Length: 258
Image (tube, rainbow, N blue to C red):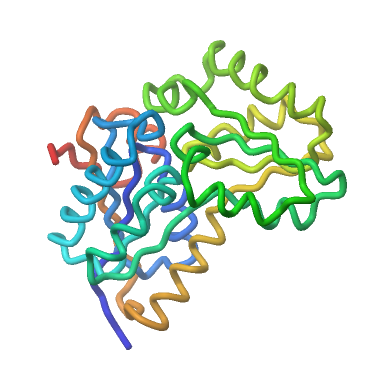
């Protein structure tokens, strides 16, 4: 089955571009529309009701733009809203949640760390997943302030370095051997995180797994594109400067209130 309509991707801000990048690399012929709801970032401090309402708004926009599948490239939105979205909309959804399973399954020390937002760590979906691994000690850390610093363009600021040190040192002392990044913004912090973590600690994010799942669902349900490589379009409802910077000014970024 062929379907040349776009893949829709949304996040609370620019962080989901880490997921978009993995999808675009695996599926370069697919047209993509990325929605950055930066005006309302971060989602991690919001109530479940607010997160569901914002997610609906984003989905409505992407459906109006003829998307054939929607990737919820936000851990907080996935863990708090994807069940409601799947019940309310007749379109396939791909979610993203912290990759606890590969970390817990492969851990030699049976101690893993999760760096995520408050909204993700407090969600029912996250806690149900964590309960499956009773023999693994899971050290949870809310990344207070990290998303906002990234959204403000302060990726390499002294404040960012200090926060990462504060959050990661207790995990190192607890003998973790895997660090799971539970927010799509956090892969942009990997170069700095690697400077803090000992070399034996492995970092896991969800980008490649989400891209493969998107490919599978397109093949089975929504249809793959047979078009030439397509130019992606990015929408943001705040200043586009940081998003353009993350994308290295390679793509069309449209500022639009939604």
